[in-house]
Amino acid sequence: ALRPSSRALGALSGLSLRSLSTLVLAEHKGGALQPSTLHTVAAAAQLGGPLTLLVAGDASSAGAAAQAASRVAGVAAVLAAEDPCLAHGLAEPAAALLAAVERKRDFSHVLAASSSYGRNVLPRAAALLDVQAVADVSQVLDPSTFLRPIYAGNALATVRALGQGPRLLTVRTTAFAPAPASGGSAPVEAVAGEELAAAQQAAGGSEWVGEDVRKSDRPELAQARVVVAGGRALKSADNFRTLLGALADRLGGAVGASRAAVDAGYAPNDLQVGQTGKVVAPDLYIAVGISGAIQHVAGMSSSKVIVAINSDGEAPIYQVADYGLVGDLFKILPELEAELAKL
Ligand code: FAD
Image (cartoon, rainbow, N blue to C red):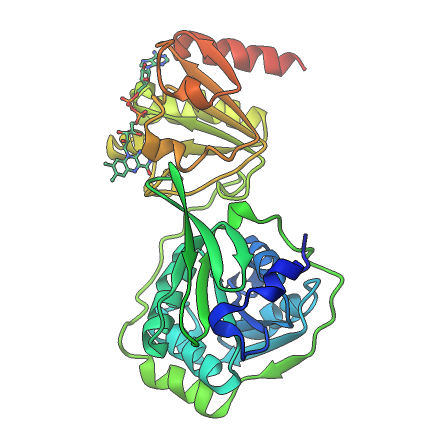
């Protein structure tokens, strides 16, 4: 699955005179490579051609992230850009860097994860390069043609990038199994000169003031194998914490929320699942007191097994659920928790 098909190689359309080569913008936190990068590398591998990872950070993070990047299977080269202006992932310097690296090295494709970081940086780089980016790619059909979900996942659009310019894509990470984090030994090259200068010149358009990072012992929502999500029917932040939290902890899972639950203040914004929240694809998704509006389903319909707990047997969530428990969540959740405690 990680090799370009002959169809892919035969259908270069606007790219016919370019040889295939892909640059992936890596995402890391304090030097630790984020899983989204591994999913994006897997998408890049489907394009064919050598694959280069670009790591941007300051002295405390770029080196460690570059080492981790060089171990990713299938990566041919790592570019490490180290500068104080790249410390916090601000979009302006990162986009200027990405565009400058592309201008100098002429990759046929530039990819980033469709995460808040990738969505912030890549379209700016596309504007600097004067090409149209393709967002949220879920399948590579050939080097210029891609599938992407539209209308909150209710339809798939086939999009063809035209012209001779590079293809800039953001990638829906849940659609691509991650590349192995180890097995590679790519050389690391430091980015300097005009490429780094471009980032430095763009710095100042924005300023990093601080961050409020929520600490949790639970797995991260986007990566969790089990997600227990609650809706408006939970009625309070307390119920969210105790009832839903207890079930999530029992299953070693993350807690998610519908937008109605977030808007009501029952759950923090970063737990929202859906079109305007996170897209998740865990092995098990338990939707508790969630009606199943299309905007919510857009964020969880790729889950392997979906369980719905809802008092309304006609709720739309049952159209996507593999298993349903029709009943009152305030009765079912404690019973479920008690049964799981016996295991
Ligand atoms: P409700 O629709 O009110 O459903 C509550 C459900 O709980 C009902 O089905 C009810 O039968 C059930 N229930 C009630 N009491 C009990 C009980 N005691 N036991 C069991 N079940 C019970 N929504 C998202 O989730 N994510 C998004 O990213 C998102 N993006 C949006 C973007 C746009 C542009 C728009 C317009 C909307 C978006 N929405 C999103 C909102 C979405 O349309 C719905 O309004 C929202 O998902 C509803 O949340 P809910 O299911 O928790 O609440």
